Image (tube, rainbow, N blue to C red; front, side, top):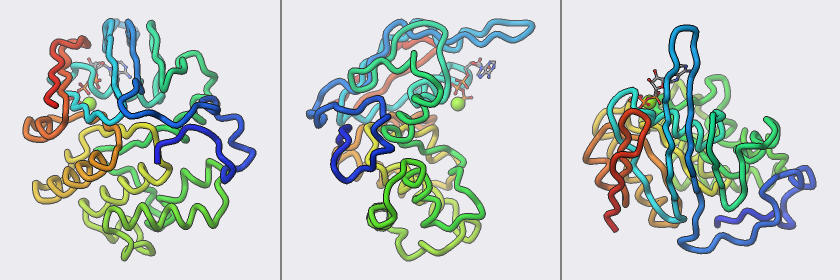
Length: 255
Ligand SMILES: Nc1ncnc2c1ncn2[C@@H]1O[C@H](COP(=O)(O)OP(=O)(O)OP(=O)(O)O)[C@@H](O)[C@H]1O
Ligand SMILES: [Mg+2]
């Protein structure tokens, strides 16, 4: 499932993928390595050290919960991991390749090909159907229509939303929208799933359903990095990394 190579079924347009040529990911290998990662936001009045000298290694198959008080840098860390934001200092290896010095367009390629995002507010496109929402990142990737259809159907099936493929997001409950967002994140077989408070906008029943879904994905081999405020949800993860003032202050491995 988790390959980073451009195999025969991917089109030539993907040849530019910067992580191409990598062999199949071995179990337990290091997927993410951060060394001395620092992110400073400079505004007119203040400098904010959102992340200070972060060293972090995430292995394939781990489920990491990122916790910490408001403003401790959790979302900034996730944005950096997801190549949505740049850094001030430090190194970031994704699957063994340095990704901080990439051009913006190469970063976008890596993001599209290797990273699956799940946001607190679902971020589905309101005027696209459920099917089209899940399909869109695959279209950007240049994947042929037949393979897209197969992938979208499989992903929607996985999250129990196949019967809503022709619905619009506005016709779904919050829990259902988040399940569609999970399908969108996994449809492309990313190296890692990044989730920023995936249950934050859901009632407890729907929140539990999304956690259950993440558990199933994890059991099937997904690597997950999830920001959460909920200690019970953090305990489901295999490891909890605690941030305070942009620093890792605790790193607890449970299994
Ligand atoms: N674009 C920005 N410009 C300036 N400062 C920022 C920016 N984004 C974040 N910060 C600052 O960086 C610090 C870390 O913010 P971040 O959003 O990562 O916190 P968080 O841990 O996700 O908090 P929360 O639990 O409230 O979501 C905060 O002090 C915040 O004010
Ligand atoms: Mg946040």
